[in-house]
Length: 209
Image (cartoon, rainbow, N blue to C red; front, side, top):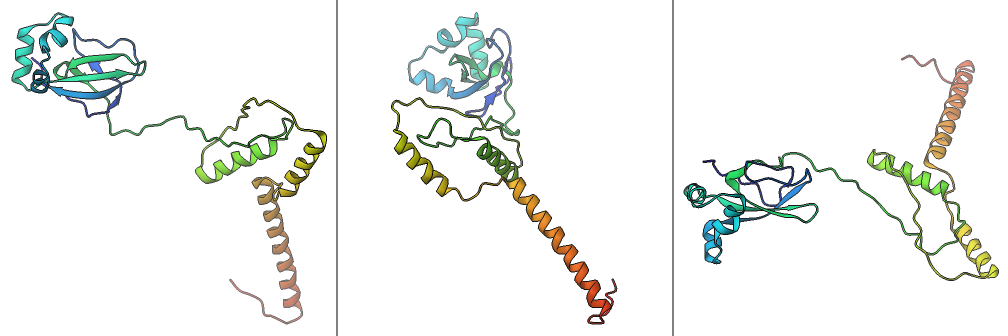
């Protein structure tokens, strides 16, 4: 007779069960319900018939689990399959002390635009912004939602003129940083030249340090 090993509600990950209970496949499962025998009996559920008999167990195992206050655990697989198991037949469940990692996607809607609109520059800027702000490497992909209809040549030229006029920054962050570094280096050189000239003319003394 095993002792109950009750997972926290909504614990998701890999579960291990002891025979005769099994989990089909190696997918992830989530604990979606924990029901005591008392609650099930109040609902007029035949616990032995519903949860023990299907795997070849009977009154003896049910009585043993009743003595240790076991509960029926409902596990929901990623494929939607539901598995019921007494918590005395759970040998391990997900460790919730870890950290969950997921594939995150940020999306940007540009609305309805010209299908030849150049996007390489802005994609690079987005990647650099994400790298600078979050410290992670981002991959920017293009997705198109099909639309119906076109615009006239005149309307297209009007839209493009307004779009170009609204652009305020055409340089990537990397390009801007290189410009700042270059300007800083130039200022340092100018300062050193002026300082040497001032010392030569006796305007200031030699700086020690």
